[in-house]
Image (cartoon, rainbow, N blue to C red; front, top):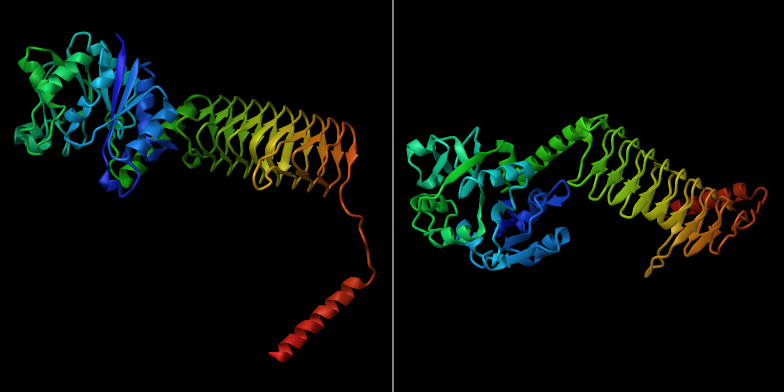
Length: 450
């Protein structure tokens, strides 16, 4: 049966103390909402509907950046979770599959858990995701009768006996779409908060003779984020799991607790990552690479055998072929570097193409920006760029060409040519001593005057 996702993302999140909608705060360089959408996306949903409220335009932008086919609907008044789900009715008109309700501030529900819920729906009409809480606190309680879920009771409405239950409600629900909206229509707001609770659909379903059950997961999957403290805890939990997964997949982390991963970081086996490396979004590292200490990578691709750093920065658009060397204090942005090329020291390579086995000397800069436009630099295969060369783009350096150290290259250099672009050295004997004496005399005069 086809699946549709309904993600609730309307809350302001006042405890975050932020103008940014709560679901757009980031864990591992990605909004909380993106984590939740990614978990559901693995089910290949036929439709995805995000219910936004506070900051709806910002939420819409984030949703479309992740899935441009997802629909965003707006809950103008926040009247409870059942009311929020009801806002997706029109977007799911004519859909005849399973609807799964997720939460934009609950980022870690695993795809396997959602698959288990769909499987349980084959013999039930409504499935709720529950967890055994170490500290049930103020969670809603799942009241079970054998394998059947009898009802869900919100903490504020629960008796002392019901509060003693440790099986708690995550809020995640799976139900056939048309049935879900039919049940929501019957939900009232006769409760302590005068809100329309999604949890009430269980009692309504049971009154109609329908079957309901709970699927359980690890409590860590249901971690919700409501404050900056929660956000930090969620980020720490993500990093811990990511590091464990990397080690399990054959990646060496020399100091695991110092490496920071993004949600979408991909690293191949037999890669070695030294301490204090940060991975931003969009990084792919192929097998057998080495990322040395204190490097920062985002939006880049490093092929097999690459050695990056220490203290290197790869920015978006950096495409490195096999066995490329990027050394200390080198920055690469929007540049394609062919196999075996080396940029080992103190250089900036931006908006450039570097050919195979080219050697870029220390202090080389591609001068790519004229204040208005970006321009491209091409460096051919086996070229040798002398230290402290300024390459003023647009400029083309041919295969096998060389530039002299300290040159400012403003014109194309043909293949196998040597380009020198610096003034002749002028030496004036004794002038250094005379100049120093003049300066000392000037300083002494100034001091007497004061």
